Image (tube, rainbow, N blue to C red; front, side, top):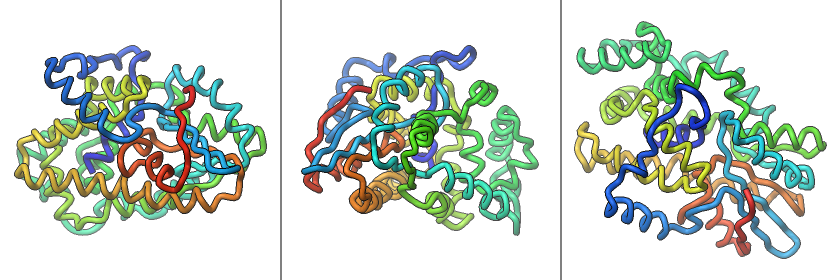
Amino acid sequence: MRLFLTLLFLLLPAALWAGCTGTDLRTTLAAGDLARLQARAAAAPFAEGNHWIARRGARTVHVIGTMHINDPRMEAITAKLAPVVREAGLLLMEASPAEKAAFEQKLGRTPSLMLITEGPTLIDRLPRQEWESLAAKARAHGIAPWMAAKMRPWFLALSMAVPPCVLRQPDIKNGLDLRLAAAAEQAGVPIRSLEDPMSVIRMLDGDPLEEQVRQLRAYTALLGGGQDDFFTMSEAYFDQQVLHALLLSEQAFLENGALTRAEREEMWAEAMQQLLDQRNRSWIPVIEAAGAGTLVVAAGALHLPGENGVLNLLQQQGYNLERAPF
């Protein structure tokens, strides 16, 4: 679950909004720590870049790393990338606008996906001190503690993943993904989903409730959308170095004192496997099955880099990769 928070944080804006400024934590690292971070990132395939072109024969795939929430800097980026979408035969997104709307309606009709509808709430499942700390953070995010107590841990975590200063901004959902979808719709370019949105919820809610509560102890101190973490991840996105932010988040998680180091390492590896690697691999057959000669794949930026990233997986399918303007 912590990785899902990282993914969400990483694709959010902050720098140009009053009240959402902060410190880029990369600038606070000692020289040796920064060098180690950069070396780890550099060792990964396709470590940088938010726009790549994969070519194989007559087939061209534009792979664009997106963020899901609005930022003024998206105006210029959309102006560059909208023509690419308009000229494509298909846009593939994590969830098309139509499937996203249907998914949100289903969530609304099925409260048990988000709420603890049977048995004790979090008040009774957590030690008093831990609950009081969590309740204070929920209150700061505008969530009444009595409601937070009824939320399933994954849903409560996501509800507090964005700093309150961002939630107050207008049009916050108009991220790069929706901007590219609008360009496709205006041009009559069909849009399809890379996956069933409900599959992500099944991953997040896959563990028994007792295990989710136990894991909650490992990142309670990291919940709440710290503005420095938020700012760092935002800046890494616009620097086209999202892997740097993920590595910093991994370090913070593994150094958190809750649970044992081995348990935290296992949790991190499992999250990486489920929320990045497994999903990336499942998308490749969808991309390959798309009939368009030229298509655009727009997905969260952290799906691009790494051994099991979409870019490396496409290269293993025989595509030649070239970094493109963003």
